[in-house]
Amino acid sequence: MKKTPPLEPSDTALFRSEFTDVKPIKQDKIPPQRLSSKHKSADLAKKLDRLNDVKQRNATFQFSDGFEGHFDSHQPLKYVQPGADSFEVKRLRRGEYPPDLILDLHGLNKEQAKLEIAALIYAAQKQHYHCVCIIHGIGSYVLKKNVPNWLIQHPSVKGFHQAPLEWGGQGAVLVLIDLPQVHSKY
Image (tube, rainbow, N blue to C red; front, side, top):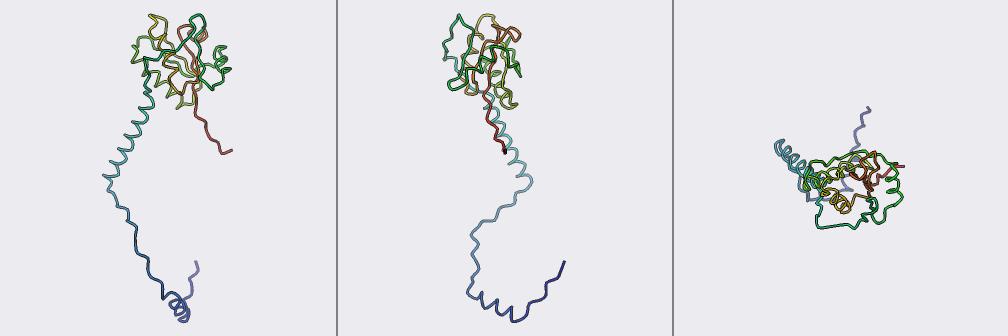
């Protein structure tokens, strides 16, 4: 690295004469306070708690029991969200979409089933799974009647159809999940 040569006295005098009217700027910024490591770890813990709260809220969507969709009892159970492609639900019926996740609700009550369905939809979106299967069974028709009504309420459900026999038939539904669009650089 080269050493810069010293300035001539005439250059120094010229520089000083050019900047005689210049006044220093007042400091109007507040310097950041240095936090101790104790404060840093406490702030990090608070941020993690807030993040976990957001994740928990996303995984526990609130379904209403008061809503009832109108389904033809003589037809297979199906639903297409307004604006969604009905051909996608037709492909569900044909069994062209194998489910990526399967949720079995046997032995759960209504409240437990709601929580599990919300968590399933959240997990499917997080893992970018397009199709899931919910096995509600037939039993006393409590879950069979309520599961479609709950699914209609969730904004991430594009549609659903009664599952083909290999995935549960009348005791299950295949659900299409609306995945967020991934932006690409290309």
